[in-house]
Length: 172
Image (cartoon, rainbow, N blue to C red):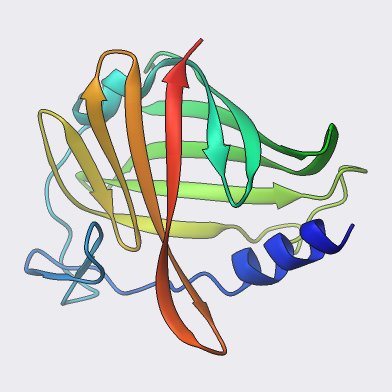
């Protein structure tokens, strides 16, 4: 339970930045947009390579993540973090086309499926940039290493400052 509380504390203090066409490096592997009003162009096809079933390690625990293929301008995903055989938390994830760009939206749930965020709230990572093997959202980046391996990096803020957490994804 202490591990779950530590992960919840860290995740509840995710460092979210504004968005813009000009970007700055936030950490070694992540970026942010400099102007919160500018939205770089993107479509759901820019992140279609996420589709599939994944497993891996993050936050000192293991996880499972599944992404549906893109359709209707969106991709839906589900995430489950497990520590010592017990669920730490769940996420429902949506990448959606909006105003000619992309938003990466996350809603967190406790093991009993009670939501972290208020009913209508969610965490939103705005699109920064993409290339053939990477998708960058403000404070969160995913790198395709191969068809069966990805590395994700999320920016976290706590009392010690800003840091980056790595997620290792392997196709199931």
